[in-house]
Image (cartoon, rainbow, N blue to C red):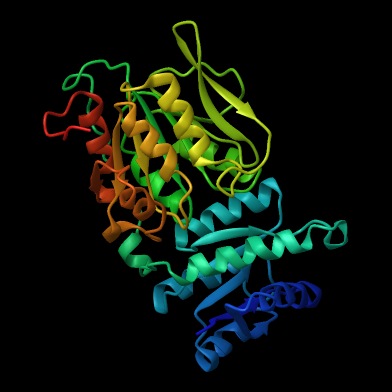
Length: 352
């Protein structure tokens, strides 16, 4: 049965364009459109859609206020549709905190020849959202981060942590990274996220965390207590420069359907770090990262996957588990603690 979508956007042209690109996918049916949240509220009751696409800025009630009410009273999968601006990025990251499953950037120029690609991207996001586990806002209320002590318990380590995530990953990463202590092992992250959003996401995490968080730049030295996030339109890899690990940020074609690609990151860590690494694959649709995580495990690294029970979309972790790339599956609430244990020679780790 096709996925039933309701489009909420104050622009008639945008509603028409989004409906056209979504209807071109046989797995999706647009059951209705709405120019503002008040009309959308009535159409949700009448049409019972599977997924909503929701504009951020609208008259009568802004998208964030509507989303908060929706996630409190009638939780359902929502894909935010945002302009590709710094201000739009900040608002959309707040929407993800409130429970939106993913974000889609409006095409800046529909006549530029990229409309078909934008349509495929939006359709993929809608399909992923239809599979998402959406929890009521009250169940996901932000709690103060409980940072895990490391200095007095574990001592230093030269292990690198590499994390990959996609749909649902923004909030999953916040759950993990905010729990790391200031002297945590270095962390490199690839999250499927639009350009500009990655810098805003890194800055937002940096304000919440004991570790330092930044968008990776080419040549950044990878050191303890620091987290590096791949730019939204570039691949992130790890390279050796003498005895030092550094970030290598590059353009190039899509890998495993994505840029940045988790596979690119994981393969580079397998090559550069071997057994001195921990690979972690979190919530997301598809299989990006599965092959790279298997390469890490074969190189001797510890590998962890998010347990199905806590995933928004149990796609990437499942794909990695099915090919033998995941050593252990861990619920998100315990992932930070498990990462630190494994970094310091957890005796419970199985042989690879």
